[in-house]
Length: 179
Image 1: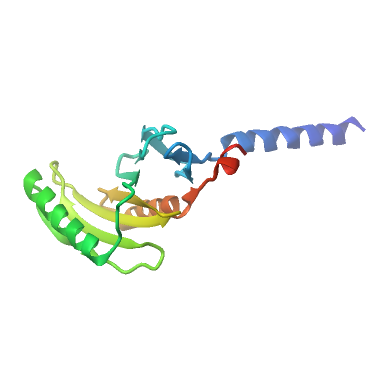
Image 2: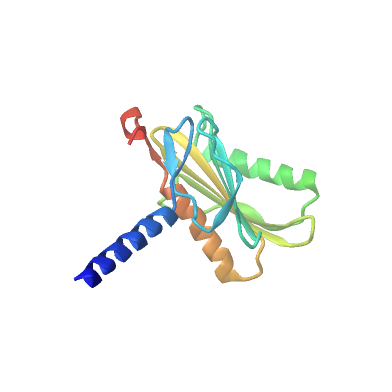
């Protein structure tokens, strides 16, 4: 009868190790905003409990995700979108970057705003970049998703990783933070 007990213990050890490897949520804004970063991405800027920004890099360095809690007065109105489009043009001009595809607002019901653009980086790669905005309990979160891959499925996977991360963001009340 020792054999079934061995199987039970082995199954328990496997379950425990699987839980240890499970992705863990990260937090911003003093732990009030919780989100799930992609499991296979490296932390570039750690989301300290009081920070408002966290940055993640794909293991192949072809993509990054930057999530930020914007100031209390941030808006996701059409006027705000126009200001962002103008600022992106100014930023690219100052950086001497060739714009491949002008920043445009795209409709996506999952997000308050979605802005997509493509431009050449300093080393000549084409950056496919999307700026996503979502409200969580009255605060605006911005997620910048960038891929410099030439492979469209890879670009799509980076985009999905960013979308999933932003969509996972939730507001945690003090009671929820303790759990």
